[in-house]
Length: 227
Image (cartoon, rainbow, N blue to C red; front, top):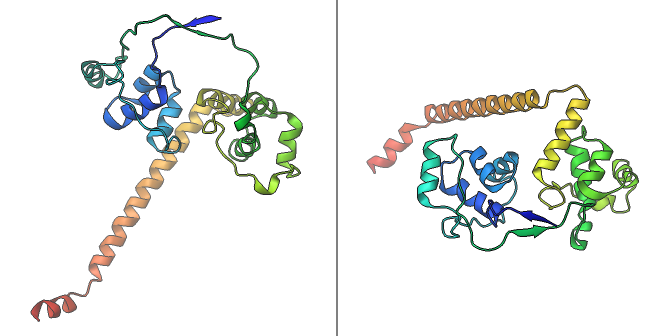
């Protein structure tokens, strides 16, 4: 067994949620401190996942000081330094085949359906590695011959705990590159499109508010005020 260095918080997700809600640290700083993928931090901030996670203060846990957080808030390039904990280093088993708890095995079809629907660039071989499934199972979900096809509910495998954000992101990037697509360029294009749509929606809302104001019948208002 290898020793795990105690330089990360004991509850990384709870710490991440708290830091997002209570500090001005960047997503990169929080990701570096917790050991989570920056995409996962972004998803927590957008409340796309992790709504049931209760934030836990790393200050109260004795892992950070308020001064350390303030130092890093002032310098976006600074890295949070966790306080040393007493006790021996934790031991972890060497990496082996992916094990899925019995309680989560029924979630696999939903996870496969999610990847097939939202990330068609991910190959079947990559899905097998991410979820711990077989190619025949994936194919049965694709062609809707799976025994539970009528009840499938596509759900993010990271939310189900079947793989990490880093693993899913790596598979997506690999799939896009295999198609000759630059993952970073695509992500930038999507972000720009989302920003443009948000700006357009804001303009539409502002225009509608102006129209509503212009069409307001002041005569009725004056009559009611004079009574």
